[in-house]
Image 1 (cartoon, rainbow, N blue to C red):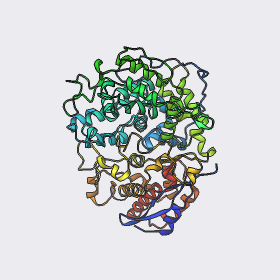
Image 2: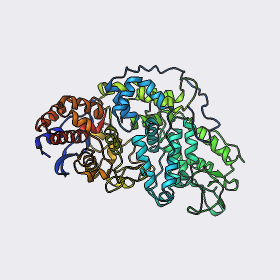
Image 3: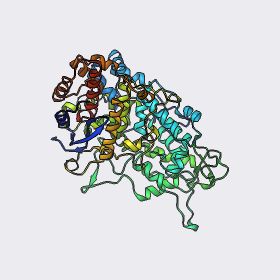
Image 4: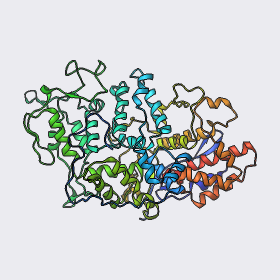
Length: 593
């Protein structure tokens, strides 16, 4: 492979609104490639499928919000905005999906996605795992994220898994793969349902009960100086529903005397902790039945009356639960109080915008999404389909790159891999088993050690990165958020870029070394056929990888590089692979616009 230092230097210096990226030189597969160290700088500036629907789900809302307040101006589908939509609503753009959006239109594509539901992950994991073996869960997650037709559902479930976090890093859940897989299936089932139903399904999940110690949380006993465990009570408020501070509908923090107003107090935590007592496995042999002795990690937890605190509790809306209420009644009342809190729309809505579209949405964008959360136009609160429409169809989503200086988001490492695989038709290798993608060491079940992420493998309940993270320096001083930068460590940047580049340079169908096809490989036949027409090739890659955002300077650099190659099959293949590698390591690519 030809090494062109000036090319690498010029690519690393390409401007991008959110990024200024110094070049790091590393040897990769016989070439010198650019890995990007990231320093973020400020700029000028349908119902749920679960089996336990809430009795209050879809309750009509009160207040100043009126039905039909959002009037979307959805543009006619072009290749650019079709790719833009797909970058946010799927695990990566493909030619076929671009054609589909252009044929059917943006709105119809989204509405059709609402009707598609793939197979349960648990069926595959039961077939190929003994319940402790982690590999099959990861294998099937990557297959469905990459090849599943229900892309919007898959993408939404992944976003929710980064908000309502469980992780199987610890011993308890690492040996509970059926339960962990069922949790993800539950997110898939509720992705387009009602938020209130989702909140209850999360709360009653036995693996969430294990992860945040609500399972076997017994009422306090003054005689022995014990209190109910506060872990789940704290996190369900801080992370899953209302956040730390009271919010305006546009997501800005309410203040009193210049200080943020807390959304809840320690007393609130203690009262909700008392609510969440008395729950354990379904059909337990005894209350304290330990993990690994047959506890049901698939079915929702059930209440055991003698361990529930039956005293009255004061909730955050001032409501008093009645004394002697059952665990079920207390839980429903408490979850209603959280789901109906005015913070939920802006708190959850902003995080979903950040996961899908932009790290720094304007307050107006957040307000429009929160308005739809509060009322879908038909008097229903928490309709997640309506929320997704509001996020994906908003004018800022389509035009923010032209009007907002801090628009866009860093691509998560997982998305870099799935996008590459989807764009170039990844196929299992000849040594693959059970239809899984087989990769060189580490396997996908250990990919987090390379890229810093894996499905349901966050290092804490705060996810792989916090939604309010801003790197120290000019970015922090300008109050610009770049959440994903928290996992953009030097090691992860280099390792992820190496992994992407190895896939492009070694594991592709046209590689003359057939041994490389033992591993999962991509197909570059279409691109190689276009290599003799550099402008047409770059036009296609611009849409497929960059949603039409390739800068003129980048195009000029890549055309110069391609001009160095002769018109032979070998050189065309090399030129194509170089161009794809360079695009996917560039600032133009790493910032999703």
